[in-house]
Image 1: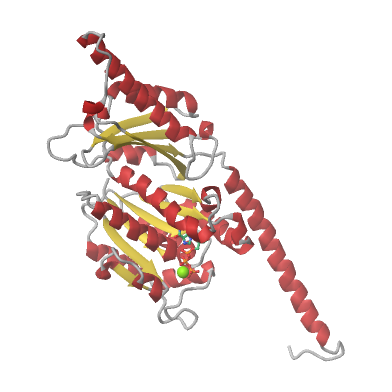
Image 2: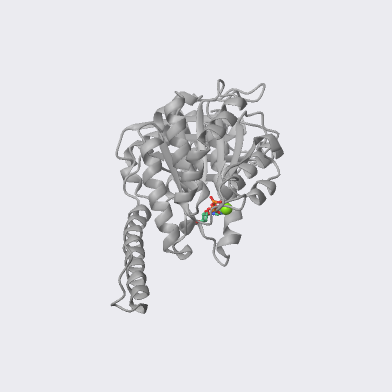
Length: 390
Ligand SMILES: Nc1nc2c(ncn2[C@@H]2O[C@H](COP(=O)(O)OP(=O)(O)OP(=O)(O)O)[C@@H](O)[C@H]2O)c(=O)[nH]1
Ligand SMILES: [Mg+2]
């Protein structure tokens, strides 16, 4: 799955940078195209792995921005993106789009630049390119305040109009015990990157000498994510033992031994997938409200198992509302872990989204009331008999 990843704003840029960092460390051969777009010069300068020619500063000519960000004003973020959309699209075009499978815009939805810019970019990309446009939207934690919630709700509604799928991540649900939100961000970013890295492996050529038990094509990812809804992703890993160090009973005959190992493998894969689907999702949701699902398992080939994957698939079909479950694996010698990814596509029962919508309505009303009261109070200062000019 060849993604053109656009990190929009600070959170988006940081996640893109970390993705490139982890891919490099893993010696990955997966091809992705990166572009970081921001209104803040320092954010772009802070990136280490996004090549300099793949960073784009916008909004320089706007006196309110001038390379310093849009200060959590996502309307300004959207305006700047709209005004400079040709520059952004040119940068994308110049990097080449002929060999990509999909666009992936990553942005924090509570701020200004990414929150406002991501929907504008999604709109134009979906109009210009036949490839699907996905977004990873990061929702603010409740303690970040109502302005962030209002921004996120607005951005989310706009994104849903234009993207083929919106993968949500909830900072609130992912805050780590005993850590500040800022400290948690680093860990949350690692979690997001792990999931995206596995998704990017779907349909890609496997390492030399390796054959997948059940290969999944990028078109199957595209089919799972079609339809324009919201997705949540589950993930689980397990450290696998070295086969040589595994002791089996000496009293068992060889054939039974093999059967035992095979059954054990299948059960392990199936339970790993279950753990991924029932554990912490990128956005907590009712799994029964999912329309489709995609399962991807990666790990050393001797630990992958077709029967296990089929078992997991049947189980997941029972769990979700729809019947479409796709499953595949990706053998790799580069790890001692087996990882399972479960994409729950087009989920509808998401408490945080409902809460966000409520909060946003409240915030909007509050802002309007405060503004009205302020105007009234300001006018009270003046003598009532004073005639206005117009
Ligand atoms: N998971 C995660 N969330 C982040 C991170 N940085 C910021 N956020 C979230 O993203 C929102 C703010 O978005 P930013 O990306 O910082 O804002 P921006 O797009 O740069 O926009 P402005 O700074 O307003 O110009 C906040 O609500 C945070 O919850 C990060 O590194 N990881
Ligand atoms: Mg910023």
